[in-house]
Picture 1 (cartoon, helix red, strand yellow):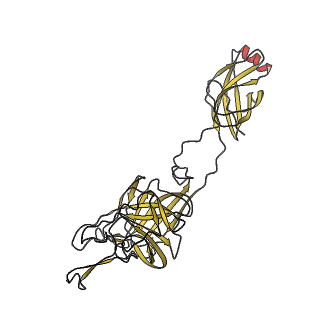
Picture 2 (cartoon, rainbow, N blue to C red):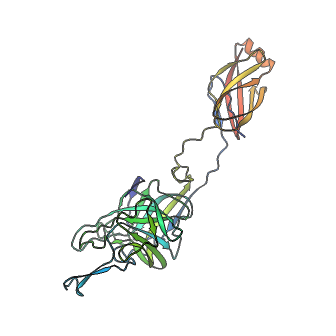
Length: 374
């Protein structure tokens, strides 16, 4: 099964439910940029089960598949002379299709920050330990019913019922990384079947379902059929595998969703972890001379197109040069600014003089102290 996301697992047991501007600048001092703050929405929400009842039903025996009967000699284990297999013990994805309370689908596009799962893996009566490896998946609904698997998390482990007090009221929290979901998506519980002969004929019984009137759980069972990109079509069903809907049952799983600044930038709309936003122009330290026509050319690099703005030189609060510009981005320019004769005289007298450059581009103001020489 493809695993696209790295994760950290945290487990907890509980009985309760839980235009553009150019930066012009020269000289010996470093530029100081003041950027207009960018509005950034961020939100934390939850969807999925409210975890209001214990997980008393399991994935091996309580899903709506007809199954099959196999004739065997009558025995205490098979008094009717047959053994019923509920379905193949193969890879399975389960997700809430409808809920009596709450919504089973992501209310916004973002990142599944935490998945809280209630329940445990039921061990076989003969002592054979159950497979505890599970995953979580982001699913998009298909137009004709069913869903498509978009992303699968890295493996986690579900507690074993009876071990360290784990039961159908144990809630375990898992923290996936980069499990991105789109608005309207489902998040599914994904398991690998765990078929082991008579011990787990229909797969490991993962006790993660609760009896809730008005809730429906969808499932899809198929060996290697729930990988990324798989279509879990509602028209693909049989007695032993494929798609099925089980009424009156709820997947005891709740998802905490982050958006904006609370979601990784890897997910659409996420901003967490982005590098600092660069200003629209860059000015390097420089010393520039005044030519015989009274112009000083200030070097700067434009990051955006169009690179449109106003550059002003001043000294001790007095304007000594001013110009506007509109240029294509992605290039370094030497912007000519005509300076006053007073500044020229001072530069000649003192063999160089400092001036403050202020450039306004795309709502950002950049200031820089430059050295002007004759």
